[in-house]
Image 1: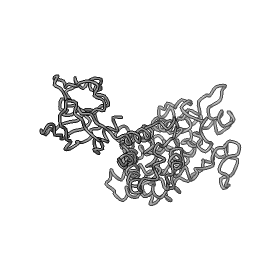
Image 2 (image 1 turned 60 degrees about the horizontal axis):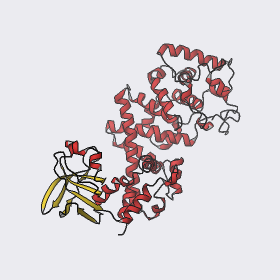
Image 3 (image 1 turned 120 degrees about the vertical axis):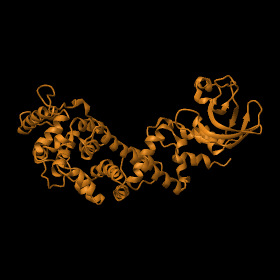
Image 4 (image 1 turned 120 degrees about the horizontal axis):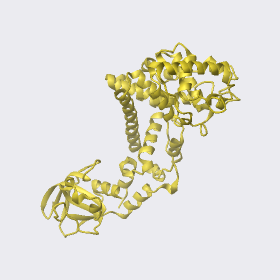
Length: 447
């Protein structure tokens, strides 16, 4: 309820402000909203009984919250000139025992009703959009401006992630891209595990062996924990794929990984790190790592090629890859030229599909282009990255589908990324008073 009070105060939507001690109160300037610790509003100006006061404002649903939050013992609240409440249940004093000017805010009932309808839990629905019924009344320009801002927020978050990798532990931009790319190959379900794999396997180790696809496959599959003994003398790879324990391919993978593990002092991930039960065959993590190995070997200058790609189509072609002959020989029943998307026995994909390649552009290529372009001061690269999002169809996932069901058209990846950010950072936590849609809906209420 306090978030509603902040908005009502900032927009001056309150009906009345009644002083507890009978003083005359006039708000000259509501001040600036403080999102950190301390009073709720800075640098406000109010006239109390003809005298202008400048300072900070604190708000609570109940006056007694002042004591419950221990503001009476915090010197940071000594500069509070006004205490705004909905219920004046107790008198309030500052740290020195002096009475604090307290006013009771009266909020219009329609505003309260709309706020409660927006911030309700949607009946417990997992993907509910509480403002769905109001979206048709939203002006297009409000939605478009908000989507643009949200998309920029999301991309800045991705850029920060890249820059953190550079500043934290990575030796180079290609090394940071390796982590971002590997995480993107996890496609949500196994993205965290893929990132842990990338962090446990320095890119410099892979660079030394890009001329040997079998060794790169051994590094990725072995580091994923799939070449270890899986019980009854079987490896995790053979258990999940029905690959014969005595096959030359598995024996070769184990031999190569044992050598490379000792060479680079590697520690594989526990096999339990991976999720298979809720994973579609196309997103099987073992197959994804085999495809990632093929991509790295086919494009030894992958990072540079991503930076040089002039368009979305160029990147989609760059990510068009099929498993190595080793993997295909043991897991694929159809030859590479066939149109069959996956093996009818194992369900493992014969190559990266269009939707997956588009996801790699959105979650790996665009963030690295933005981060590197900003670092280099290359505005053309930054603009090219953002244009790519507008030229990729919207993603299909439960978040985007929730907005579509709410009647909101989602045309491209820029919009779907914006709405994904909106749901995960605002709707999910019912931060409607920090959302331009929620604020507009409240402000548009006719009193």
